[in-house]
Image (cartoon, rainbow over all chains, first blue to last red; front, side, top):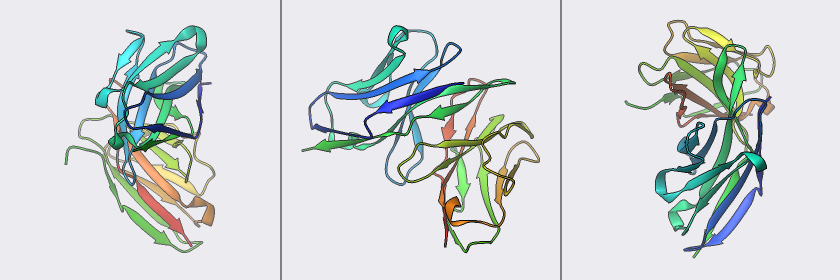
Length: 116
Length: 112
């Protein structure tokens, strides 16, 4: 079975500071990993995904994440936070049912707060 | 439109009533997913369709929940005898063969 753990339900950083959102995964097969962002009253939007190619993945809005197999981690970073980054962030791992790769299992989310 | 469309965006109902939530996926996407998101939680998997058939319905919480996709496109999530604990945002997503999920904005269900 696949699962993800997001450390910290809330993270607060100052505008211009480094953003680091932590995600650890558990998977019995080589994982496909994702980060999604959710702005208030909106659906989930894909930030980036890891699918066994380059371990450092670049996404939209200046975010990137590094897959570290030895640490079973896929932490999300951004060098300089912007006020518009304030949102809920979800890490997810691909599920595998009997028919093959299908849906996603999500973490509980991390609420990113940007202080002016 | 180009994205996943969900209707209604908001639904308020009374305990015990029947509710239907509709999802119109992106044209050409063969896979369709339903998730439920409670306040302060991540999306919880409910059911997954590949074409017209439910490939995995292991996330449906009980037999009051049912979903159909009769023509392999639009899907309806049906909830019978609603309970207050069913209140949540119900998210639909579709994906092409590449597997990336595209989400709709959700249907917020409130059971009074």
